Image (tube, rainbow, N blue to C red; front, side, top):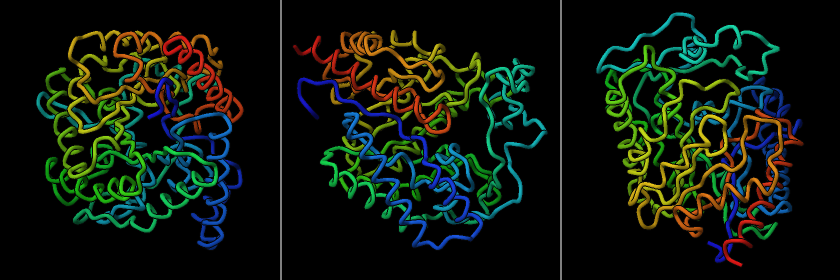
Amino acid sequence: MTANKIITTHVGSLPRPQRLLEANQQRSNGTISEDDFNEILKNSVNHVVQKQAEIGIDQVNDGEYGHITSGPVDYGAWWNYSFYRLGGLEMTGEDRWAKKEAIRSEPGKIRLTNFSDRRDRQKFREAYEDPASGILSRRATVDNPAFSGPVTYIGQDQVQRDVTLLKQAMNSHNIQEGFMAAISPGSAARLEDRYYHDEQALLNAVADAMHEEYKAITDAGLIVQLDAPDLAEAWDQINPEPTVEDFQNWLQLRIEAINRALKGIDPELVRLHICWGSWHGPHTTDIPFEYIVDQCLQVNAASFSFEASSPRHAHEWKVWEKEGRLKPGQKIVPGFISHSTNIVEHPELVADRIERFAKIVGPENVIASTDCGLGGRIHEQIAWAKLESLVKGAEIASHRLFG
């Protein structure tokens, strides 16, 4: 880590260039060779790393460009890419979460319902269905697979390609620190289970499979960021609302699965991203951070990424005032830039937000980031302007905190 400086990063997803989106569509249709696709991907990764370097981002990534999408979309790849990296799956010909029938949970037995039945969507049904409301909740209909056999990892070539392209681009632009996002076991395990019929067994199997991806990333000296919306966002996908105790019990299985997947991996190379979902909506049914933060901190990671700027979670900086909550060796990676607004945050506001956290946990334990991924949520021009503001704000805060 750089001394006497607030270092900067982001959550991962960055706007994809049009040529890469087209190549994803061509790849899905079988109208582009693998060599041609990889050449486009290589050039795109090099360009996105160059842009991050020019802006001054310290911990860069590949924009998640290596997470293959199934069409010309700039969102959803954080999850869909795992369909191509896990064995034991079979395509179902349907989008499980687009189904209309509601799935109900019971006390002590949590089950995730479909997207249209989520509690926030029920509460604001008219707003969600009004295309002029400003809510950005669209998602491409994607053919979801189901677990139909033993889960294995088959993405070795893909993850090695991603690692190689990112490392090459970092070397070309003299970048020292990089990270790569990867889906958490609990999030990957949200697909339909037609084989194990046992929640714990499925989580263990997915954890063991994803361990290979995490290890490939960290063996290359890169930070692996575990994208884990199952730890927070899933609360809204449980209908009716469960008790906090039931959710915490459900959550603990996923915390244990993450640590199982991280066995033997240096925590210094692990970042946990805690996510309430990146769609633009009211989010009135988000679970308060206070109810889950201590469980999240059980993950064997050195840094923890979370929303700190969205209108729904900006007040939760207070959770870090509890003495002893952040353990020695742990750092926080708050989002000082929001993906949920087109307004570009002023650098002075970014600096003020950084200083607030720095005064609580110490400036050496704060890494400046974004709330969530920017790709697919805001226009490319605005996304890059926000990252520029993040860097400028971190420079202001660094001057104030370190002199």
